[in-house]
Image (cartoon, rainbow, N blue to C red; front, side, top):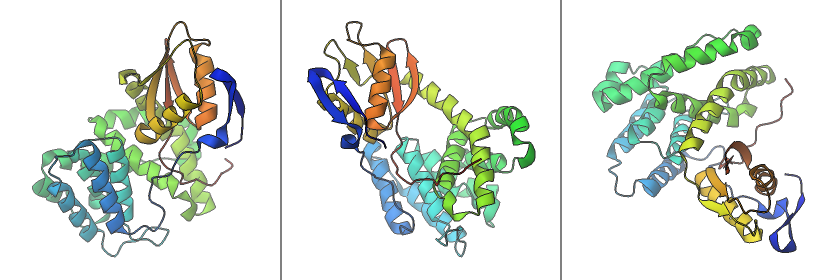
Length: 294
Protein backbone atom coordinates (compact mmCIF):
# COMPACT_ATOMS: atom_id res chain seq x y z
CA UNK A 1 0.00 0.00 0.00
CA UNK A 2 1.53 3.38 -0.94
CA UNK A 3 2.34 5.81 1.85
CA UNK A 4 0.17 8.89 2.19
CA UNK A 5 0.40 11.65 4.77
CA UNK A 6 -3.00 12.89 5.89
CA UNK A 7 -3.37 15.55 8.55
CA UNK A 8 -5.66 14.51 11.36
CA UNK A 9 -7.04 16.10 14.49
CA UNK A 10 -4.33 17.46 16.77
CA UNK A 11 -2.00 18.11 13.83
CA UNK A 12 -0.97 14.46 13.88
CA UNK A 13 0.39 13.05 10.63
CA UNK A 14 0.10 9.31 10.11
CA UNK A 15 1.63 7.31 7.29
CA UNK A 16 -0.65 4.67 5.88
CA UNK A 17 2.12 2.12 6.36
CA UNK A 18 1.78 2.63 10.13
CA UNK A 19 -1.66 1.03 10.15
CA UNK A 20 -0.79 -2.29 8.57
CA UNK A 21 -3.41 -4.93 9.29
CA UNK A 22 -2.57 -8.30 10.73
CA UNK A 23 -3.09 -11.42 8.66
CA UNK A 24 -5.30 -14.14 10.00
CA UNK A 25 -6.11 -16.32 7.01
CA UNK A 26 -4.32 -19.70 6.74
CA UNK A 27 -1.51 -19.86 4.16
CA UNK A 28 -1.34 -22.27 1.23
CA UNK A 29 -0.65 -25.91 2.12
CA UNK A 30 -1.84 -25.55 5.70
CA UNK A 31 -2.81 -29.02 6.87
CA UNK A 32 -6.52 -29.93 6.94
CA UNK A 33 -6.35 -30.50 10.70
CA UNK A 34 -5.04 -26.98 11.32
CA UNK A 35 -7.71 -25.52 9.03
CA UNK A 36 -10.43 -27.52 10.78
CA UNK A 37 -9.26 -26.22 14.17
CA UNK A 38 -9.30 -22.70 12.72
CA UNK A 39 -12.89 -23.27 11.56
CA UNK A 40 -14.04 -24.46 14.99
CA UNK A 41 -12.24 -21.59 16.72
CA UNK A 42 -13.92 -19.06 14.40
CA UNK A 43 -17.40 -20.54 14.98
CA UNK A 44 -16.95 -20.56 18.76
CA UNK A 45 -16.27 -16.81 18.70
CA UNK A 46 -19.92 -16.16 17.81
CA UNK A 47 -21.50 -19.49 18.88
CA UNK A 48 -19.63 -20.16 22.15
CA UNK A 49 -22.13 -22.70 23.50
CA UNK A 50 -23.09 -24.28 20.19
CA UNK A 51 -23.04 -28.03 19.62
CA UNK A 52 -20.61 -28.46 16.72
CA UNK A 53 -20.86 -32.25 16.39
CA UNK A 54 -22.69 -31.98 13.04
CA UNK A 55 -19.92 -29.76 11.67
CA UNK A 56 -17.31 -32.26 12.80
CA UNK A 57 -19.30 -35.04 11.13
CA UNK A 58 -19.65 -33.00 7.91
CA UNK A 59 -15.88 -32.45 7.86
CA UNK A 60 -15.23 -36.18 8.22
CA UNK A 61 -17.79 -37.04 5.51
CA UNK A 62 -16.34 -34.44 3.10
CA UNK A 63 -12.77 -35.53 3.81
CA UNK A 64 -13.62 -39.16 3.11
CA UNK A 65 -15.63 -38.29 -0.02
CA UNK A 66 -12.77 -36.21 -1.48
CA UNK A 67 -10.08 -38.73 -0.48
CA UNK A 68 -7.54 -39.09 -3.29
CA UNK A 69 -8.58 -35.83 -4.98
CA UNK A 70 -6.12 -32.94 -5.28
CA UNK A 71 -6.28 -29.30 -6.32
CA UNK A 72 -4.17 -27.75 -9.08
CA UNK A 73 -1.73 -26.69 -6.36
CA UNK A 74 -1.13 -30.33 -5.42
CA UNK A 75 -2.75 -29.98 -1.99
CA UNK A 76 -5.53 -32.34 -0.80
CA UNK A 77 -8.89 -31.20 -2.17
CA UNK A 78 -10.49 -31.09 1.28
CA UNK A 79 -8.52 -27.87 1.93
CA UNK A 80 -10.82 -26.01 -0.48
CA UNK A 81 -14.16 -26.79 1.25
CA UNK A 82 -12.50 -26.13 4.60
CA UNK A 83 -11.40 -22.66 3.44
CA UNK A 84 -14.89 -22.00 2.07
CA UNK A 85 -16.38 -22.97 5.43
CA UNK A 86 -13.93 -20.66 7.25
CA UNK A 87 -15.01 -17.73 5.04
CA UNK A 88 -18.65 -18.49 5.91
CA UNK A 89 -17.79 -18.71 9.60
CA UNK A 90 -16.03 -15.33 9.39
CA UNK A 91 -19.37 -13.99 8.09
CA UNK A 92 -21.00 -15.59 11.16
CA UNK A 93 -23.37 -17.73 9.13
CA UNK A 94 -25.49 -20.47 10.67
CA UNK A 95 -24.35 -24.06 11.12
CA UNK A 96 -26.37 -25.32 8.15
CA UNK A 97 -24.52 -22.92 5.83
CA UNK A 98 -21.13 -24.01 7.18
CA UNK A 99 -22.03 -27.68 6.81
CA UNK A 100 -23.18 -26.99 3.24
CA UNK A 101 -19.88 -25.15 2.64
CA UNK A 102 -17.95 -28.23 3.71
CA UNK A 103 -20.11 -30.42 1.45
CA UNK A 104 -20.64 -28.02 -1.47
CA UNK A 105 -18.63 -30.10 -3.98
CA UNK A 106 -19.51 -33.64 -2.89
CA UNK A 107 -22.50 -34.07 -5.20
CA UNK A 108 -20.70 -32.68 -8.23
CA UNK A 109 -17.27 -34.26 -7.68
CA UNK A 110 -17.78 -37.47 -5.67
CA UNK A 111 -20.07 -40.49 -5.54
CA UNK A 112 -22.31 -38.85 -2.93
CA UNK A 113 -25.81 -37.88 -4.05
CA UNK A 114 -28.25 -35.22 -2.87
CA UNK A 115 -30.22 -38.03 -1.23
CA UNK A 116 -27.11 -39.06 0.72
CA UNK A 117 -26.64 -35.49 1.95
CA UNK A 118 -30.31 -35.23 2.97
CA UNK A 119 -30.18 -38.55 4.81
CA UNK A 120 -27.01 -37.59 6.69
CA UNK A 121 -27.63 -33.88 7.38
CA UNK A 122 -31.27 -33.11 6.62
CA UNK A 123 -33.25 -31.52 3.80
CA UNK A 124 -32.15 -27.96 4.58
CA UNK A 125 -28.46 -28.71 4.07
CA UNK A 126 -29.25 -30.86 1.01
CA UNK A 127 -31.16 -27.96 -0.60
CA UNK A 128 -28.24 -25.58 0.01
CA UNK A 129 -25.74 -28.03 -1.53
CA UNK A 130 -28.09 -28.67 -4.46
CA UNK A 131 -28.46 -24.93 -5.05
CA UNK A 132 -24.69 -24.39 -5.13
CA UNK A 133 -24.26 -27.38 -7.46
CA UNK A 134 -26.81 -25.96 -9.92
CA UNK A 135 -25.13 -22.54 -9.90
CA UNK A 136 -21.78 -24.21 -10.57
CA UNK A 137 -23.29 -25.96 -13.58
CA UNK A 138 -24.45 -22.72 -15.23
CA UNK A 139 -23.01 -22.66 -18.73
CA UNK A 140 -20.86 -19.59 -19.45
CA UNK A 141 -19.80 -18.88 -23.04
CA UNK A 142 -16.52 -17.20 -22.23
CA UNK A 143 -16.20 -15.53 -25.63
CA UNK A 144 -19.56 -13.77 -25.00
CA UNK A 145 -19.31 -13.23 -21.24
CA UNK A 146 -19.78 -9.45 -21.38
CA UNK A 147 -22.96 -9.77 -23.48
CA UNK A 148 -24.28 -12.53 -21.25
CA UNK A 149 -23.32 -10.96 -17.93
CA UNK A 150 -26.59 -9.22 -17.02
CA UNK A 151 -28.74 -12.20 -17.98
CA UNK A 152 -26.42 -14.55 -16.10
CA UNK A 153 -26.59 -12.40 -12.98
CA UNK A 154 -30.40 -12.42 -13.14
CA UNK A 155 -30.42 -16.20 -13.66
CA UNK A 156 -27.93 -16.63 -10.83
CA UNK A 157 -30.14 -14.70 -8.40
CA UNK A 158 -33.35 -16.36 -9.61
CA UNK A 159 -31.98 -19.89 -9.24
CA UNK A 160 -30.80 -19.29 -5.68
CA UNK A 161 -34.06 -19.32 -3.72
CA UNK A 162 -32.11 -19.07 -0.45
CA UNK A 163 -29.65 -16.17 -0.04
CA UNK A 164 -27.31 -18.59 1.74
CA UNK A 165 -26.77 -20.42 -1.57
CA UNK A 166 -25.35 -17.22 -3.06
CA UNK A 167 -23.13 -16.62 -0.03
CA UNK A 168 -21.71 -20.15 -0.23
CA UNK A 169 -21.09 -19.77 -3.96
CA UNK A 170 -19.41 -16.40 -3.43
CA UNK A 171 -17.20 -17.92 -0.72
CA UNK A 172 -16.34 -20.75 -3.13
CA UNK A 173 -15.36 -18.28 -5.84
CA UNK A 174 -13.43 -16.09 -3.37
CA UNK A 175 -11.21 -18.97 -2.30
CA UNK A 176 -10.69 -20.02 -5.92
CA UNK A 177 -9.58 -16.48 -6.76
CA UNK A 178 -7.18 -16.46 -3.81
CA UNK A 179 -5.51 -19.56 -5.26
CA UNK A 180 -5.69 -18.46 -8.90
CA UNK A 181 -1.91 -18.56 -9.33
CA UNK A 182 -2.00 -22.35 -9.66
CA UNK A 183 -4.05 -22.18 -12.89
CA UNK A 184 -2.73 -21.60 -16.39
CA UNK A 185 -2.53 -17.94 -17.53
CA UNK A 186 -5.41 -18.52 -19.96
CA UNK A 187 -7.60 -20.02 -17.20
CA UNK A 188 -6.62 -17.18 -14.84
CA UNK A 189 -7.89 -14.60 -17.31
CA UNK A 190 -11.06 -16.57 -17.96
CA UNK A 191 -11.87 -16.93 -14.25
CA UNK A 192 -10.96 -13.31 -13.52
CA UNK A 193 -13.26 -12.00 -16.27
CA UNK A 194 -16.09 -14.28 -15.14
CA UNK A 195 -15.63 -13.08 -11.56
CA UNK A 196 -15.57 -9.39 -12.51
CA UNK A 197 -18.63 -9.59 -14.77
CA UNK A 198 -20.85 -11.97 -12.79
CA UNK A 199 -19.75 -12.55 -9.21
CA UNK A 200 -18.38 -9.12 -8.24
CA UNK A 201 -21.62 -7.21 -9.02
CA UNK A 202 -23.62 -9.78 -7.05
CA UNK A 203 -21.21 -9.51 -4.12
CA UNK A 204 -21.40 -5.69 -4.27
CA UNK A 205 -25.20 -5.83 -4.22
CA UNK A 206 -25.18 -8.15 -1.21
CA UNK A 207 -22.58 -5.94 0.51
CA UNK A 208 -24.81 -2.89 0.12
CA UNK A 209 -27.78 -4.83 1.52
CA UNK A 210 -25.68 -5.81 4.54
CA UNK A 211 -24.46 -2.21 4.90
CA UNK A 212 -28.05 -0.99 5.23
CA UNK A 213 -28.56 -3.29 8.22
CA UNK A 214 -25.36 -2.37 10.08
CA UNK A 215 -25.34 -0.20 13.17
CA UNK A 216 -22.54 2.40 13.45
CA UNK A 217 -19.73 1.37 15.78
CA UNK A 218 -18.07 4.82 15.88
CA UNK A 219 -19.21 8.42 15.63
CA UNK A 220 -16.95 11.17 14.33
CA UNK A 221 -17.67 14.40 16.22
CA UNK A 222 -16.48 17.99 16.12
CA UNK A 223 -12.89 16.98 16.90
CA UNK A 224 -12.61 14.87 13.76
CA UNK A 225 -10.36 11.80 13.79
CA UNK A 226 -6.93 11.29 15.26
CA UNK A 227 -4.35 8.53 15.42
CA UNK A 228 -6.23 6.62 18.14
CA UNK A 229 -9.48 6.63 16.15
CA UNK A 230 -7.70 5.39 13.01
CA UNK A 231 -6.09 2.54 14.95
CA UNK A 232 -9.45 1.64 16.56
CA UNK A 233 -11.10 1.62 13.12
CA UNK A 234 -8.34 -0.62 11.75
CA UNK A 235 -8.79 -3.04 14.65
CA UNK A 236 -12.56 -3.06 14.05
CA UNK A 237 -11.97 -3.87 10.37
CA UNK A 238 -9.73 -6.78 11.41
CA UNK A 239 -12.55 -8.15 13.56
CA UNK A 240 -15.60 -7.45 11.40
CA UNK A 241 -14.41 -6.66 7.83
CA UNK A 242 -17.55 -4.59 7.17
CA UNK A 243 -18.16 -1.62 9.49
CA UNK A 244 -20.27 1.53 9.59
CA UNK A 245 -19.27 4.90 11.07
CA UNK A 246 -21.54 7.89 11.60
CA UNK A 247 -20.43 11.49 11.05
CA UNK A 248 -22.09 14.07 13.32
CA UNK A 249 -23.40 17.34 11.89
CA UNK A 250 -20.76 19.33 13.79
CA UNK A 251 -17.84 17.29 12.40
CA UNK A 252 -15.15 19.41 10.66
CA UNK A 253 -15.58 17.60 7.31
CA UNK A 254 -18.37 15.89 5.40
CA UNK A 255 -18.91 12.13 5.24
CA UNK A 256 -17.23 11.71 1.84
CA UNK A 257 -14.03 13.43 3.04
CA UNK A 258 -13.81 11.14 6.07
CA UNK A 259 -14.58 8.12 3.90
CA UNK A 260 -11.65 8.89 1.59
CA UNK A 261 -9.27 9.67 4.46
CA UNK A 262 -10.08 6.52 6.43
CA UNK A 263 -9.77 4.34 3.32
CA UNK A 264 -6.34 5.85 2.55
CA UNK A 265 -5.11 5.27 6.10
CA UNK A 266 -6.47 1.77 6.71
CA UNK A 267 -6.41 0.17 3.27
CA UNK A 268 -10.19 -0.28 3.47
CA UNK A 269 -12.49 -0.01 0.48
CA UNK A 270 -15.51 2.31 0.38
CA UNK A 271 -18.84 0.50 0.14
CA UNK A 272 -21.43 3.26 0.37
CA UNK A 273 -22.48 6.50 2.02
CA UNK A 274 -25.93 6.50 3.63
CA UNK A 275 -26.79 10.10 4.56
CA UNK A 276 -24.32 10.89 7.37
CA UNK A 277 -23.04 7.30 7.70
CA UNK A 278 -20.12 5.74 5.85
CA UNK A 279 -19.48 2.03 5.32
CA UNK A 280 -16.08 0.38 4.77
CA UNK A 281 -14.89 -3.09 3.90
CA UNK A 282 -11.49 -4.72 4.29
CA UNK A 283 -11.03 -8.45 3.87
CA UNK A 284 -9.21 -10.45 6.55
CA UNK A 285 -6.70 -12.03 4.19
CA UNK A 286 -3.51 -11.04 2.41
CA UNK A 287 -3.63 -13.96 -0.03
CA UNK A 288 -2.64 -11.82 -2.98
CA UNK A 289 -3.93 -12.57 -6.45
CA UNK A 290 -1.31 -11.94 -9.10
CA UNK A 291 -2.18 -8.98 -11.32
CA UNK A 292 -3.71 -10.11 -14.59
CA UNK A 293 -4.10 -7.93 -17.63
CA UNK A 294 -7.49 -8.50 -19.22
